[in-house]
Image 1: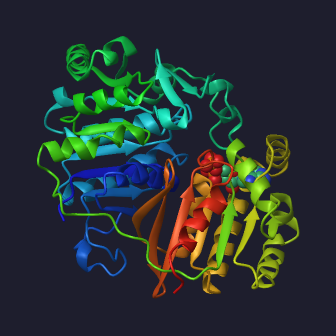
Image 2: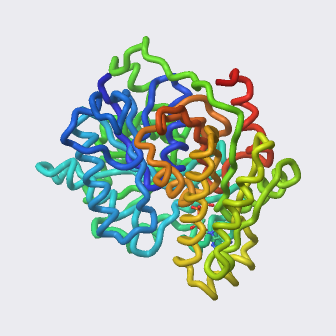
Length: 440
Ligand code: ADP
């Protein structure tokens, strides 16, 4: 199948989030966990396993990596997507604009733009649109809101890796880019796609390359998608992608007969692995603890008492249960105390490696259903499981679909949840959906 839209996501749950939005169109989607090799044709690649789809998403783990590394990895990803014939490209980051003073949102966008318009610098322009109204993210006067609060007053201010302490997207983007940053306000967006297009044009004449666009509801996002349909590169959270399939259909780019995959059968045994410390995940974990056997990881114990081995032994004694949970999820005070003792990176790394190792242990012992909470956590888990491609299926909650892959000759179902996504009953809801399909 021809690829129409080529996306690059800065973490794994970002990729599944984008996939779940695109999946509402019923169009087949693949998530590639890392950039597939260029040497072999995708259809024949035993690792990639699945042929190309109209929407291809490459999931990277570069949100907090050094800028140089993120730029190089995303350039490779773009190169692969270009080779699949994609007509438009999407740089997907978090709807809470998770980044540091150095990047990686701005530097990557700038480098992708350079790659896409190597011979025509005049065409170098892209939009920034993290708004996701359904999940409470909106942008007004270039300021990002989470629900009714500014980003800097939201729980994102305490994120373990990318604490967000400024809500002004222009101020966040400027230190990350070398080319000029500008804005389109809601008053223009409300006037529709022609007004946005005209404004983009006048900004381009002033050599403004990076344009932050206000959006507070879905009609704003539709107008922005329409206005930017001819831009080679668009950037944002996932919601901007919602209207793209329809716009592509109107242009005759999509074949009506292609449809999304149903979930394959898997055995009942499941595991929930949570390394997210986000406010919503803390509620989800507290609730699921009341329902299934659970084990709490503590980075300090992982560092000093070999708690990983204890967790594996505990897991081995849980065979009678359909579902269990292992989590490191903790309140901000506890995360801070841990980070003071171990350092931010070491604490995170210990948890990610341990949860990944536990996922492998569980799957090697027959588990085929895995739910992970946390972007970095999910990245570490899927990497350790060694799956290369995920096919996207039903949506569990806005931004989180069920996905499936093959591992060691068996199906594996994976729900990769970004920290703040889903309602309090997310874990039971996700696994309940699979129980509606008969056992293998
Ligand atoms: P989210 O999607 O909520 O941002 P992530 O998994 O991306 O979740 O990030 C959470 C980070 O916090 C990970 O690097 C994880 O290893 C780290 N972490 C998890 N639990 C703890 C803990 N108890 N103490 C310190 N760091 C932790």
